[in-house]
Length: 108
Image 1 (cartoon, rainbow, N blue to C red):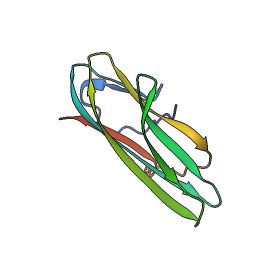
Image 2: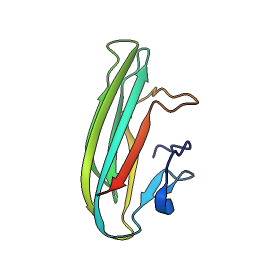
Image 3: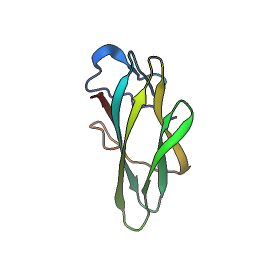
Image 4: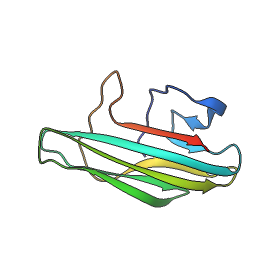
């Protein structure tokens, strides 16, 4: 599980920056985005995961120094469901004090 410690907005405190998991406080349709930037000769695959099942995958390939991969998932969650980002394969995602590799979501 990737942990994103830099939290910009966390209405309802559904995202836990110590575990990297978002937990739905109520049933609804949620939209989640993942953005990954690999560096140098690294390739990295990231999944958006819902209750342990990968829903979408993105890839940032090593064909140039800095490559970006993005994806999104629209998920119907029950109260208590969890969503997170996991590294499926590869290594070397890039970030700095202003986040570049990110995970975002909101309730419709």
